[in-house]
Structure formats: structure tokens, C-alpha cells
Picture 1 (cartoon, rainbow, N blue to C red):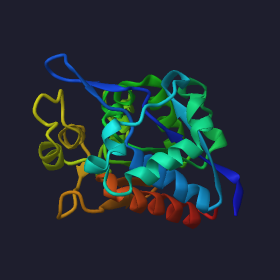
Picture 2: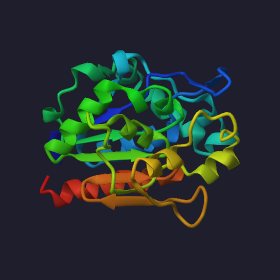
Picture 3: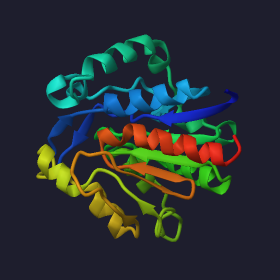
Length: 238
């Protein structure tokens, strides 16, 4: 058991994604990604704390709770969110997070992070502190948009040169959200210097571990991302 070890999950506080034409696309975090990861950490014996910008109650993307989009497990995800509704209602303020208290920080996706976390100064501070103190950083799908926040004063990116993945441009096209998107995650990460990789098949599980950075490509990669984080933690002697 890891009762003294706590993992921080950072969730977007956004309930929409502002499109190129100024319209708002209703979104938030993707239920499968948060639920699968949260459940795996709890089952592994870790404590889990939640944070969001401003400590706002995060919004689940309605599509992720609809079996048409979220898959046949969507009702189970909804039930789990109900079970932990109390902690979801009162996350920590991201500005108040002390990374010294955590062994890892993990950011699930949904399009929400592409609205707020990608340029959030508190998110950047948490990531820089995590990297400086050799903590595990994990993220899946659009969660890696949060990694974009970590830009040094000289304009260089904290994760330049790292092997990582995230929601692919091809999947964005298939999902119907690439057109009118202000930017595409995989393209943006490549532009900043990431060694971006994607799996051979869209929507199939694909995760990469590069040192203490663990990233997953899409919702189906949530379990692999959580397992990767747990494996790195186990290897670190936790």
C-alpha cells in the first residue's frame, strides 16, 4: 500500500472550447480518462487529490457520458463520478498546489485543457516544479495541452526533445473537431520540439514512457497511461 503517497490529478476548469470563429464548443474533461486513471491509482493504494484553475468544480464533457460517444462503459463512468461527487465539487485551487506533497501530477483530457490549462501560469509552475524535483508527470489525450504551458523565459519549452504522445491530428479530424480548431495539439507539440509519436491505429491504446514523463494518445489509452505512471513510481522505489 502507498498510504503516505499522494498523486495530484489536475482537471480543466473550462466548460467550453473557443473555436476559431469565436463560437463555443461545450466540453470539459473526458469522463473515461479521469475515471479510469483515478480508479487505478486508488486501487493501487495511492491517495488522490484533485485541483483545477481557481478551484472551480470541473465539468464532464456531456459526450463522454453518452454511450454514443463515450462507449458502452459511459454509464459506469457516470456512476463513479456520482460516488466521488464530494471531492469533485471542491478541488484544490491550482494556484495553491505544493508539488512537494505529491509523487506525481497527472492531467486527463477532454477539450477543456485546450481552453485553459495550455496557457495557465499555475499549471506551468506545477510542471516546472515537478520536473525540477524529479516527480512523475502523466497525461492523456488532450491533457498534454497542459504541457504547452511550461515555456521558459527564453521561449524554450520544458518538454522539447521528449518522446510523447497525445490526441493525434488524424483523430481530431475523425472526431469532427479539427476544422475550426484554433490549433491542433499534435502539430503544436511538434512545432515546440516534441518527438511526437502516435500509434498505428486511431482510437487504439497507445502510451509512451520517456523517463518520468508518461503520455497516452486517446481515451482508450487511459489505463495504459495510469499503468505507466504506476510502473515509473514502482521503479522509483515508491
